[in-house]
Image (cartoon, rainbow, N blue to C red):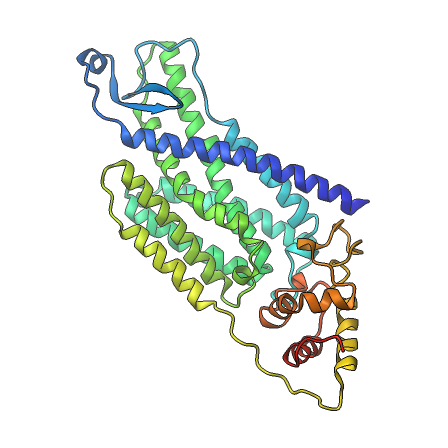
Amino acid sequence: MEGYILEWLNLLGRWVHLVTGIAWIGASFYFVWLDNSLRAPKEAADAELGVGGEVWSVHGGGFYHAQKYKVAPPELPQTLHWFKWEAYTTWITGMFLLCLMYWYQAEIYLIDPSVLALSKPVAVLLGMLTLIVGWIVYDQLCKSKIGEEENKLSLAMLAFTSIAAFVLCQVFGGRGAYLHYGAMLGTIMVANVFFVIMPGQRDLVAAKAEGRAPDPSHGIRAKQRSVHNTFFTLPVLFVMISNHYSMTWGHEYNWLILIALSVAGALIRVYFVQRHHDKETPIPLVVAAVLIMGVAAAIVPKPAAPVAVDSSVNASELFARVQVAMHERCTVCHANAPAQPGFSAPPKGIVLETADDIVQHAETIHQQVVVTKAMPIGNLTQMTDEERDLIAQWYQTGAKSE
């Protein structure tokens, strides 16, 4: 029953997280486009009122005319729309999922004894510290002299995130490391909204309401953090889907793959932002493509080293041993009714209970168990090297059941 409840909580949490994430990223992308597409107002009267830029657009059968003031309008409008709950709800639901899967079930998804033997409380504490330290380091970099020059700040953030990716992959299992890296970036993004963007906007509104001159520095800081957020989005989205692709987080150099694909994602976003400025150059897109293709080429699965085949064991006996190993190490999760707490259904719908099931999924078993060793996840069931060699021998000899 626990697994069934967890499954429903996971489903609903992911659904809300996806919906609110789309709303937040969509709003972010739109306003970055809007800000970079503004042109000087054509009407002198608008300029005199403090309008700094305007843009015309057409969508859904209608024309829209958006204007941005240099600091604030002469008078506050009756209705003023704020954009914050998309960000807050995305983070809240993301934290709910992180707690539900990676902290509550840390022994499955976060801890990998072959990487580092951690107790559950220590692993969860390190996960929490990742989010806190990530925000503190980023925020202090932005407030430092380095933060005054975007190129230097970008290099500093590249160095910091690279170190974070490496350290996380030396502490947690690959899947947990990737998700905590993404959670760190997501926390930085929402903290930018909560601690910098929203307070600045509140002060601008309060200044107009109180009749004092608004402080333009709030707008400058808010725009800087907003632009940073848009560059973080594609790396975060990659991490969100990475758990489905063990070829990345399960690789020996998973930290390097994470860095390369994060940089590629950021560069793709740089390209599209530059297009808004009419300063389009294909260089970021080309570099991103080279990085992605380079990673794809570098992690092409290498044929597993052949193992010695015991000719005295016939095919039926060999398969019987494989079936025992599957039963002891894999069907705890990959069964119609999984025995592993937290699972109400077999992962990816793969069932390995019968001889036909095992033969049908021979290619996947060999790839995940022998080549990448990504399964069992975190080696939760303590599969031995001898058992992996046994599966390799069975696969080499045709993966037959008799």
